[in-house]
Image (cartoon, one colour):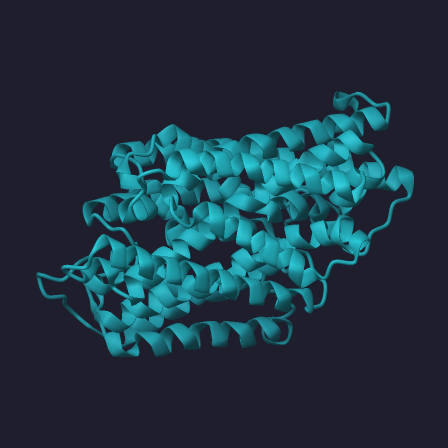
Length: 488
């Protein structure tokens, strides 16, 4: 595919998104931006959340990851399923009962001011880093296959991408994203299915024959039984469960979409439906990864990073149509994670730190102007973060994402677990210190785990340890009873 054709496809796709934006953002106000006026159809939210959950990271990293980890990621996905059940049955009823716009408002009612700001602060840090990585992955592909051919610097490419995201999220927010995510999920899933078909055709092998060969090989191994291994199946399962609880249930971006449903019952329908479909979709990505691995080995294809495998095969070996399919799928996977992150971060900063919803007499015009300022400021932070990521040493992005989640979402897991499952009153003033010390301790335990724990290596279960340390710290500095008016 020529760089010009890639750019034209990108612009046409963006124009389609802007059309949806124009339709959905008309007469939008602050409540439309934050919670979609609580009128979003649950089935639309469920379908759109598939694209938002997978993102460009899954689209590129998971297929390439098969070479190093086989199908062991599916055990994490099984854990996801149980995590979504916990969200639907425990967290969503709490959020709807308290009528929350920002889910971190719960921490203010349960603990106090400092715990509230700590929780919101960790979300902002987590989502900024995670979204920056997701955006970087897509921007880097566009740089390699489009902008390098025209000698356009990486920073210009990054700026163009960020500006496009700003334009179509600035006014409509969640009300717009609910519908653009639906469009993008459709294109992404089509891209995966069509890519599998193109690989099968290129190898002159029927799909079921390739699938049979893969199932009989070591590539399809899911369960690793060595407990010393980073991907020991029990660690994978429970890590997946708690990754979901934290990165979805305790994440403003994902919950903001659920809270836009008409009521709790519809939000729960959304979560159950979405979680079931997601298991199948992740398996589809792993099958694609196995097909890519077999194809690259048969053609002698080598890449510098596993993240480069899918785009290299699609653009250079499968022909222009397959490359076009990949590009549309990648863009479709990238935009949902970027737009949702920008919207949720704007919501959290505006409500949790600027207190827009608590300012009586604040006009809609003033609230909107403040929200626009926050929106643009966060977009600028994304831009700087992406440039920093460009300079970091190479590693599979999805691995980086889960590693960061272990450190940044762990304190949120501890805070919410303590609040929901104990009746004790924590020392609000010490919460920031406890929340910072927990990931610091985890870092050193992970770094020296082989020496300290007889060869044991921490994987994604670092999140559980981090949450436990936060929980233990809160318990250590807590009183026996809550006052009756305090929340549990």
